[in-house]
Length: 187
Length: 187
Image (tube, rainbow over the protein chains, first blue to last red):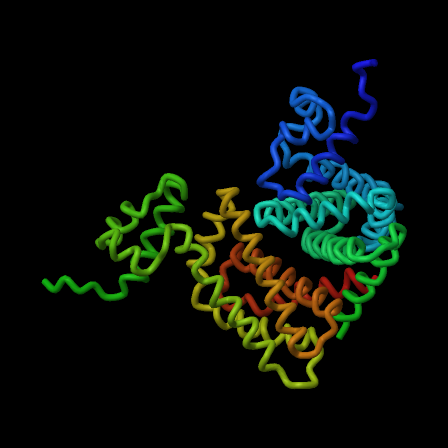
């Protein structure tokens, strides 16, 4: 038997979220995760700095997707058109992660400390989106409001997406949220 | 000399925010606050459970103002009209607290733990506003987006209000933020 284990990171993630979901985040240890994945703690720490990073390690990639898409939007695009391009990229990113996202949402919802971390990541995302809009020449005030609006649309759509069964529904749910935001603010 | 001290709570708040601002939040102790106010630690704990509550004790009042104003809006008012009524009440609440709000903002901005606490309070506020809208018969999806939009407008306007000198400007800054949100989402 080879000692080489294919997709160690993927197996660690799967073992971790299964344990977080079944026995609770606080009760789960790195040793327990590694054991369930048939790997060592040392291998775990090659991929993650701690167990929380299994849930939040994707934040940097998510933020990079937003910022890159906003930067790549056509020169004349309005702030919301640039955000719309970012929502496309983000919806694409998540389409094959629906099962993970559903379990992860359940885990986060069950733990106040993780909920706080999630809020902080979303606020950091809004700050990064705002900066990316300002870098496009959007006035700071408009950039701040557009960034917060974009992140709220994402947050609300994402919460609905993990509550329903269609992995491909995220972009449609984003459109619905954006339309609802437009409709409530237009009144 | 009477040992009775008028407005103990007000003096404790003033002493606390002066110390937080001058020497940092972490370096300030309850004993130091009480001493600066010419009062005892025991008196401090009659008003506050800990030093953080000096900064966040007003959150419950703020949330109550929002929820009460939304509940009191005319039966036929749209979600944003109800939020607009809440913004009126909130602007009124803060008008004579500009100096406190400015110092408090500086203290919170200087401390990541306090920034996190602020985010959590704002998220709780959005949740309470959403519930108050649902209680008026607003559909949950629209209520969620209207609540987040209202809180973002408040947050952005408040941040601008503490950056400028006119205590009476908050309501106007809220209107400007709302108009900007409308304008960016309408595109």
